[in-house]
Image 1 (spheres, rainbow, N blue to C red):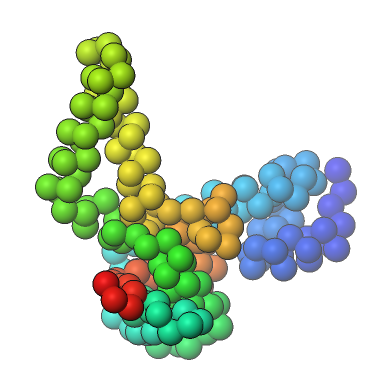
Image 2 (image 1 turned 90 degrees about the horizontal axis):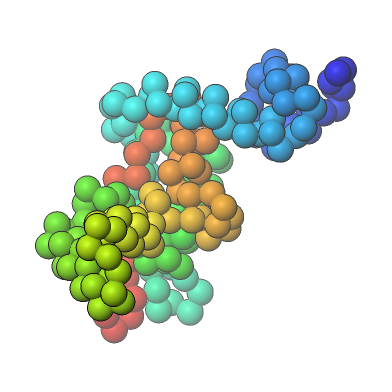
Length: 197
């Protein structure tokens, strides 16, 4: 199948990937743009994984105040160089994450940061619920693990569906940015303020 230059251009604009990568993705996917995007994202994930562990000591601290002045977020996101910290892509990502935190109210950035006592409390509640529903003993652990995964997906910033595109998690959004900018990027910390809380 012949891949047109326009198809490559459109895919490149959507993904930010290089022209040759876009052409190869379209060839691999038989010209299907959606499958080509998936191919590039999978490839980007591999690129992004190689960036993890590199020192990220630059970045920005960003303050977001929701209209009405009753809700705000302060957020630190780090990258490797000041050059990347000044790019529009990086700054737009930071703004989007701050807005997402305001809307979604995550408990922590990742699973590892959630208080183990809270996790154990949730585990006991889910176990008791399953027993009360008459679930068999042999599947209780699977049920509890499934409910805990849902709890993490709702409570951990990196696992939440992005408010502007719920089909994409914050981790996927971050991974795509790492692949595009070629630097390790870390969501370091955040604080969410609501008036009266």
